[in-house]
Amino acid sequence: GRRTGTTIPIAAEKAAPERQQPSSLDECRRCDLWQNATQAVAGQGARHAKIMLVGEQPGDQEDLAGKPFVGPAGALLDKAMIEAGVDRKTVYVTNAVKHFKWEPRGKRRLHKTPAQKEVMACHYWLETELEQVAPQVVVALGSTALKSILQSGSVTMKEYMDAPFQHEGRWVVVTYHPAYALRVPSAEARQEAVANIVAALKTAQDLAG
Ligand code: URA
Image (cartoon, rainbow, N blue to C red; front, side, top):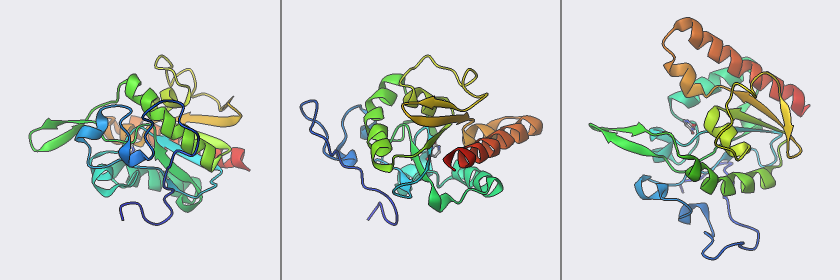
């Protein structure tokens, strides 16, 4: 199957608040992104992880594999976790948006940033994961993750990056998205971004106790 190993299959457990509520992530039609994606990519990791890492959306490789953070950004994230002393098997890794949004660029599929209405539509699934996993600490990897967690399209990373904060009974730690660390042009800025991600993971580990 597509979701093997420790992946938690997401199913709506609550009574549907609206008509035509999707019963599973695979069948989700809450926004239109499913139309161009290969499959929905659910979160993966420890069932009751103390730390949940939230990215933006699956990339090209994640869309094909059906697993989060298995491409280049995932490789950088893996390295950062090793450097921070965080075992990937103990955390839960997911995305704000579960379907890959892209546009054709020659033979390639070019990532497109999801619109806030898509982030909000998919927040339903992040909320389900938060309830099931019940982490003590949520790490927002980039702006889209933060906008989903705070359910606001107008928040900026800058105002939340300096220190961890409490939101809905959990700690939230904000850092750069690993793909940002891969694409910043200067080596210095790249190193700073990686260092920030590593520091955020260490902070998350400390807060999780
Ligand atoms: N970028 C993300 O935000 N998530 C992934 O799963 C892969 C790349």
